[in-house]
Structures are given as C-alpha cells and as structure tokens.
Image (cartoon, rainbow, N blue to C red):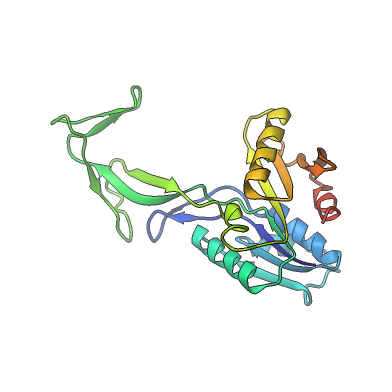
Length: 239
C-alpha cells in the first residue's frame, strides 16, 4: 500500500522573523512511517523535522526505495503539500499525526496612548472611554512597544478537508491530544472527533500520558489502550 504520514509541528507567522508554533517533534509519526516501510509499504513522510526520522532509522534499514521524505515548515506549507500528495499520488492510507496550529495571526496591535488593559477585570479603559489600538503589522514588528496584542483566527482543520474537499477515499487515521482529561472523557472526545472527520481509526492520548500510552480504535467497536512502544505495530496491523 501507499501511505502518507504527516508528522511534526506547524508554524504560523507573526511577521517575517517571528511565529507561533508548538512543542512536538514528529517522533511518533516518524516511528510509524519507518515501521510501515519495514513492512514493505510505499511511504511518504511529510514532516517538519526530517532529522527525527534519520535519528530513529535503524542502521540496517535502507531508505533508497519505497520512501519519500518531504519537508514543511508553516501551516500553509503543510496544507499545500498534503493537498498535492492527495491529488497527485494514489494513496491508500493517510496517517495524520502532525500537530497542526489551531489558530493563525491576522493582526498585530499596540494599545494607543491612554488605552490600558486590566487583567483582574479583563477589561480595557482609555482616557476618552473608547479603547483604541494601533495596527503594527510590518515585515518585522518593532521591539520598542511596551505590549502587543495579537489577533488570532481559527485555521481550517486539514483532516476535515481530506474527504469532502480533496476527495480522499482511502483509509484515514486521525490523532487527537487532550490535556488533563480522564480516560473515559478522552474516549468520548476521540470518538466524536473521529466521526466528525470521517476517519476510520483514531489514536488518542493525553499530554500527561503521551510518552506512555494511547487509545487506539475502534477495533471491533472498542478502543484498546496500547503502550507507546507498541503503537506503531498495533496501528499498522489494522490497515
């Protein structure tokens, strides 16, 4: 089978030299991609951290055949390259493990003179009663402002675009990470999210337990708790 694995983190720019990103390095996705290649699949690994895959590769694993490593950096890069792969490759499986930005910057502002924010009451005040902000969008936002305010808007969910917008008809694996929730609550969130995206399988975990375990399913209508070490093989056995 031909498998696309997305891995790593995306960046959304604030200006030409600054951006907002997250902490993930793509280790899980790279591990899955390498295991899939060992099983004889044709693999495309689309990652923001190509060095992770090289660090995880076993010395005896040659990647000269059935392996394509593609790099992205920003959210827009990932969207463009995912779309191109879905449209241009005959993909059987998409394993979407990349940690994608939920918001992007659409404005950078500084309070106008006389405008201030009160954290205790979460309110603005100004000398004339009408809080005002000055647009500070530039190639490089100046560092002499006492404070800056970023306006963020939601990014489109790439995993939700795969089927209705890009026409992917193969097997889809979605990943979901939550923070400080119980396993029962995680299971509820995971199954609702899987259904929303039209995914066939879900890998769900918490930030607190991500290095130890994940929930994988549905397998025979149930989710199974698997260790981090066995996740790649258990997942690939289902596809």
